[in-house]
Amino acid sequence: MSTTPQATAASTWNIDPVHSIAEFRVKHLMISSVRGQFTGVSGSLTYNEGDPALSQVRATVDVSTINTHDAQRDTHLKSADFFDAEKYPAFSFSSSRVTRRSDGSLAVAGPLTMHGATKEVEFAVEGPTAPVKDPWGNTRIGVSATTKINRRDFGLTWNAALETGGVMVGEEVSITLELELVKA
Image (cartoon, rainbow, N blue to C red; front, side, top):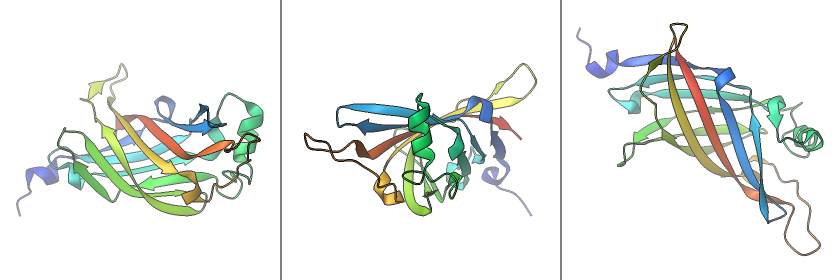
């Protein structure tokens, strides 16, 4: 039985949680954006360089690691008003489709599960970078991925009306993943 080049090109990479982050940006008071990040990112990539469509991504984010640089806001975001971290301690993504775009970048689509709701999302992906050896002998690659979601689609509906019209928190949320992965 012969193997195709695509079948032999697959390699497994684990997300390095120390060098990876999930960031978000959402409008506040309809005038500026609040940014935050989750540092508890874990998961893996099975990457088929010969045929990226055969690749698979899995990632999990620990909600308790949220940091918006305001402890009171972080506590509110972990509460039942938003993420309800006690009931839903993590959100997760598992790719169902990987395609190469005309510009050479990748589009990675699949279900995102957050706050008990699952919706299909698509990340625009830059990378993976060329592999590099770190000083400890590990091989590493980097990936940047971005998407936008409507937080209401995931049951994150808390808001407050403003006296001048509008709302305190926007519905559209930009998400960026900056991932460093180590070859398994």
